[in-house]
Length: 279
Image (tube, rainbow, N blue to C red):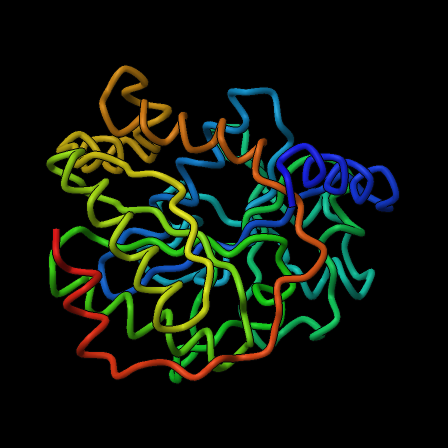
């Protein structure tokens, strides 16, 4: 399909949709990959671009969650809003960044809860928590996009591919996006993105779309101590520039009609590890 035809189809789907809200689930591919960092910074960057942003925090109230880092204490959660016990305005908290935050622990709200009915215009970011078997919650499964966050080290790439494979088989996903976080060298990040995308296509018949990278910046820790994201606290920093670029690109991601497809058998993981990690 040509780009023009694809863009027209995407535009038609948006025109016919009941809401203009885009839902993006963000999750880590391995410990310390930085998905919460990415979710919060992307949310803050989108607000700076004039977007209305709701962050659904599946990790709240754990240490390191968006609620904990931003030092906010919402009065309710997604289940309260879905059931009508509370309004979104009374349950959620607007962080200093302008992002509205609502706890959404998995298994509490109904599996058919759709945040688009609550947030009619803008972006919903789900800071998604994988279960013990590496699967998504129903809320994250229903997102328009799934953004996976990984680190550029070989061990992290290996862990990331294993997680991608689990998600692929568990949910029948046919397209995923990924962001390389904590990058020291941009050219190395580009090679990782290319190799990982090729490995997904070759061994899993899966479209792995590179969303970009965020460079390592020691000021992330300084921003955290200020209870802010680096986008808020140090807007000229390398990481802040990168997160703003990815957030800007998100508005141009094609709208997909369906994120699922039949699952094709994969090749042994070791062969894919060599292909993806050859950076």
